[in-house]
Image (cartoon, rainbow, N blue to C red; front, side, top):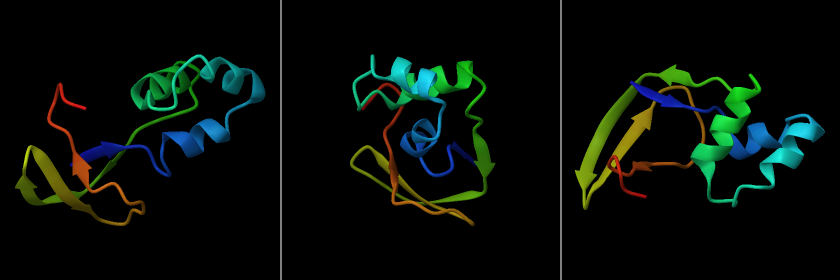
Length: 82
């Protein structure tokens, strides 16, 4: 299983109300986790659990396929690494 955000955190942020979007400007564009947390505090984001199959692990990265989803994220950093 994988927990993710459909359409990406950036897409959800773009659809947030104007006052919430203004708050998001305090974060750097690379602060995806912080942006997601802020959106969740406003009840604007909910993770979706999907069926996922790990297809490879190499160089500290895990590659996976997720059923019935879209996007181009194919690797996860190990915990504590970015």
